[in-house]
Length: 115
Ligand code: SF4
Ligand code: SF4
Image (cartoon, rainbow, N blue to C red; front, side):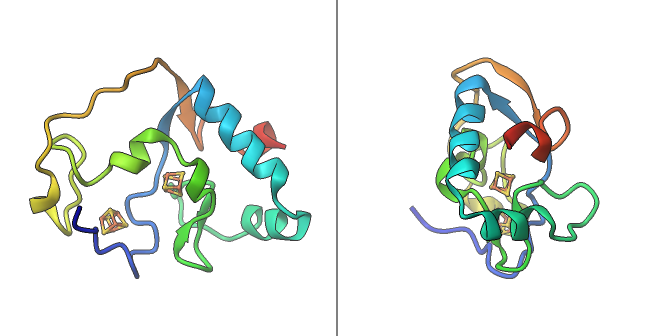
């Protein structure tokens, strides 16, 4: 699958996203497994207003990449989740969540929840 041109984007599309119970558990595990120094560095970064609480601005990437929610994994490749920098990659049908969402990451669930 052709890759999205995310480098240098600084998390432009990484804002509040819906999450499931299972995804929250996975993220919690990931956060708890991080070395404290790394976790604090990620938590205390100055992000743009509205940027996802896990976006690693210093390194220009998702700070919880292996544990990121499903919607982040499929972004850019579906008609209802197209990337404006490469909309031609959005060739798949509309994306529908397989499991029920329990809230919004960055809004309902902030760093406090994951520690
Ligand atoms: S998906 Fe698109 S908007 Fe999001 S970081 Fe990648 S290139 Fe940028
Ligand atoms: S979890 Fe990662 S990929 Fe998803 S919005 Fe946040 S920073 Fe972006």
